[in-house]
Image 1 (cartoon, rainbow, N blue to C red):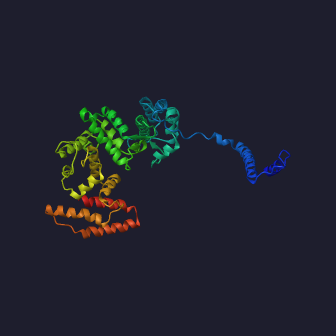
Image 2: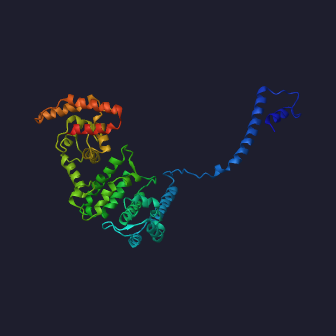
Image 3: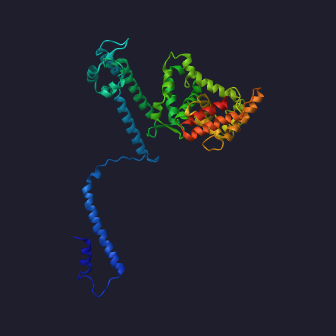
Amino acid sequence: MDWKDVLRRRLASPNSDPKRKKSEQELKDEEMDLFTKYYSEWKGGRKNTNEFYKTIPRFYYRLPAEDEVLLQKLREESRAVFLQRKSRELLDNEELQNLWFLLDKHQIPPMIGEEAMINYENFLKVGEKAGPKCKQFFTAKVFAKLLHTDSYGRVSIMQFFNYVMRKVWLHQTRIGLSLYDVAGQGYLRESDLENYILELIPTLPQLDGLEKSFYSFYVCTAVRKFFFFLDPLRTGKIKIQDILACSFLDDLLELRDEELSKESQETNWFSAPSALRVYGQYLNLDKDHNGMLSKEELSRYGTATMTNVFLDRVFQECLTYDGEMDYKTYLDFVLALENRKEPAALQYIFKLLDIENKGYLNVFSLNYFFRAIQELMKIHGQDPVSFQDVKVIALLFTYIISSDNIATVVVNNAVSKFVWQ
């Protein structure tokens, strides 16, 4: 029945007082009440036809507040149980040895050099015998990924086994890092990563010679590299996924090798010689032994050829305490200078050169630093370089940037070399 007809009959019903004539406002209010009633009934009827909306699972769960102790404990316990279950799903040493035995047993001749090979048919047979934990590795996708140029359509057993080992290691490391993820959001804060590395030190034979009094400085040195390169926006946290994707963790765990060469240790930022070198340089620069570096003390870094205007910019842009630099800020400075081809280092140096905060370098900015370099060259008795030559190069790069933003990296690299060389 149409609600309009109902409304008309209601208004014309004998129950209404014929002597009293309703005002226009009362009629409108009554009409609106009836409209709301029938519209709600009609809307409710439609809702019944869409019951599937009730089956949508809940996808957002808020984090417990600091005062909700019970909910926090429940969250921690449930995460621990989840990580334990994930850990049990991984292959242990005995299962890996059994997998290698099965692969070796099902190899297909001829061998390529000293490498045993396996075809797809035997590959699937090994997958059936290896157990449920190995099922994820014995797929057509994995086989095709490892298949290269073998004329018999086989893959290397060693390459496949290394693939499995790498996957298991990544999952183990992911679980190990997740244990330090206090927030449970898939990232580590600086304090979380510090705790992870501190507890990792006793498991690294190459760090056995470190004194415990140096542990805090070593942890600071190691953690700083992760945050300098993996946290460019300085949010104070790093995704666990990013930690696993970069090579830093490989470099750190390389210190488990008791026979690591001296050359490898010198090039590894996380090695004991490297950490002692960086910290030793910091102590040598700190002439007043107050644990901080002034601008004058930092000027003796390296070959002591940094200009005053560049040092001024360092102390203007970097975090300082009463005009002096602490060890963490010094580590950022060293990482930028020793890795000038990396994007994070280029960003660091570019920020120092961009004195007007415009997001690009103009002739004025280059000339500002170049004048100081010219003066330093005169002091050292070197032939001065004309700024016009540098200006032409800068204008050329500016033209390239206007046409192609990719050239920005080239410009940054060229400018960093210009400043330091």
